[in-house]
Length: 312
Image 1 (spheres, rainbow, N blue to C red):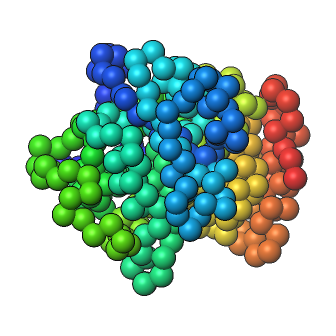
Image 2: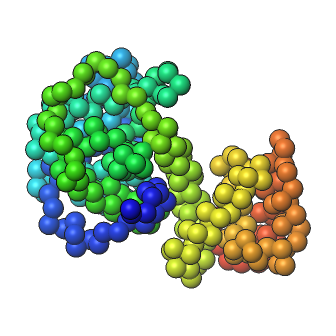
């Protein structure tokens, strides 16, 4: 039995494995790529695409809908995905033998799914990390039905500055899109899938913390192996959440402390006041308490940073 799937894991593929593959579709997350349709027309004169909220109850918010775009070799969108899609995670590439309309119909089945408690929720399947959950093995919360029209999928990873390549597993049955499927029935999420989706939110927060460091503490980032840096920041994030610091702003302040002081194990000796603040339950004053710690770290460290790392 292989290791359990973890959304925090680094890609196992090398760039060489991806270079010769052609992906004939790109799925854009319209909630992450502002004015995606207008931007698409700026890239390509006559894009061949479908807005996945068209024809659904969500048509009124079609401006933030996922867009499924057909991409021939050399398509400008494939280049944009490589250039900026990795850092922003606004979509992923798909290889499929299905037509554009058949693939769009398949994806629309997953716009709204049923929560284990019985109510309907929107599924952010155009988010690359959510897609990694859906494409995992069923024992890890994956959804074999989601795989059915794909032969391969290439998903960006901003955390590790890389790409995940997933090839259609041999054990999947050959089921064509729209066959043996009751299209009107909402897909029901399992508990394992739901647990994985919760992890994607924590991972998204970790990406923001690492990007904060890259912006304001480039020398700290450059002096660390990325694996060690991510481990350090994840440790601080998990402990801060357990200590009552739940907002992104509070977590960014603790990330700033790391930028000045380094890993958590050094804080008690280097700055006992900050260490005490970190372990003191903040109640409703989480952001103020974390900001105080960041200010102490800034004034005591005297380190050079890029811009102003403390906001709010």
